[in-house]
Amino acid sequence: MGRRPARCYRYQKNKPYPKSRFCRGVPDPKIRIFDCGKKRLPCNEFSACVHLVSDEKEQVSSEGLEAARVNANKTMIKLAGKDFFHLRIRVHPYHVLRINKMLTCAGADRLQTGMRGAWGKAGGTAARISIGQVLMSIRTREDKIDAAIEAFRRSKFKIPGRQKIHVSSRWGFTRFAKEDYEKWTATGRMKEDGVGCKWMAGHGPLSRFMRNVIASPGDKPK
Image (cartoon, rainbow, N blue to C red; front, side, top):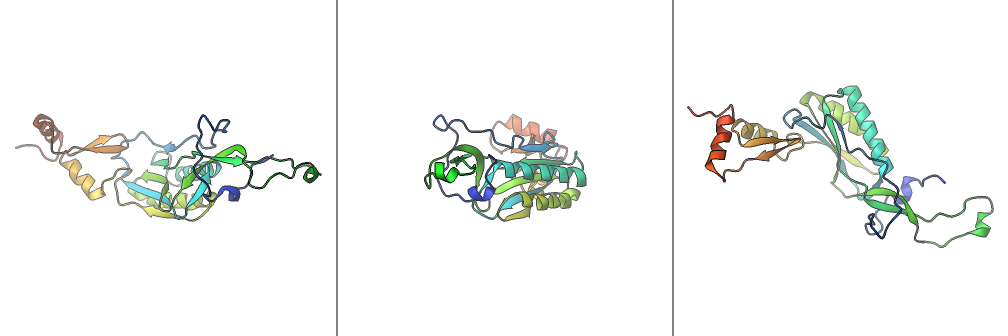
């Protein structure tokens, strides 16, 4: 028996139903990779960021997320190059979908008609999405923004509902604006931390503060 179409599980009708010791036998989600591309490059390599934002309250199956990830990844490799982007899936399919399996052979209506609204067995997983929630994000170089927009435009066809493409004003995956990131990096107040960064506050030991200021190239004491 094949899987049901996504329209059967598109709307959030019930409470969240995660995998637990009471909900066993859940099949593995189709999507297993949530980061693609150059995911280990530090945050100063990619300054631009583009988001795919949901415009509906709905459920997206793990199959749909995997199809969108593959589509966006292939498009970015083709248009931007495999070394010039980092793609991240921002939602996880924790919600378990249920299906009440019945016989579908000839004459099954005489044998098994079933009960309406019956409790079914676990048949898949989906992510519960709200309006304005980010589904996928790509950090890349400034000259590759158009490629990221095109990648998300093609990925939208793999996900139900409406989505919007948003070009962020922040530096990569960080929470700082591009102007603030450049300013605080030049003064030694910003420290790289993988794909993100750490804000070096003004409080704390004076030795640490002076060490950061002296190490920064833009503000050496005279």
